[in-house]
Amino acid sequence: MTRAEIQDPRTEPADLLIQYKTLGSIYCYLAAMLLQAYRANKTIYFQNQLRLLREDLEAEFPRAPDFPVSDEPNRVAQTLRDMLKVASGRKGRS
Image (cartoon, rainbow, N blue to C red; front, side, top):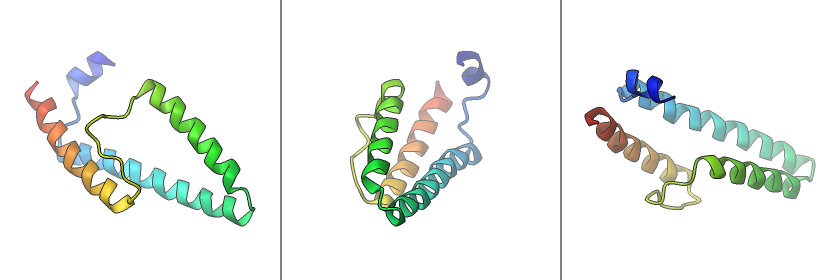
């Protein structure tokens, strides 16, 4: 992983867009799955499964402490976009 990161730190605007769009597509899938769980009256089970998945991911990829917590998707998206640009600039200089 280190060698791959050194050879291609993914700091170009297109690379940032891919990261951003990946998260967007995951959000879309989650929304569609939540709708299906709601229709099946299984939202509590869905939310529990989602919590477990988040905890597993967070064990390997801890939440960035400087990323503000929000339940507003548009605010989260804008913050992520802004913070990816800043992080990209730092990676490009390293």
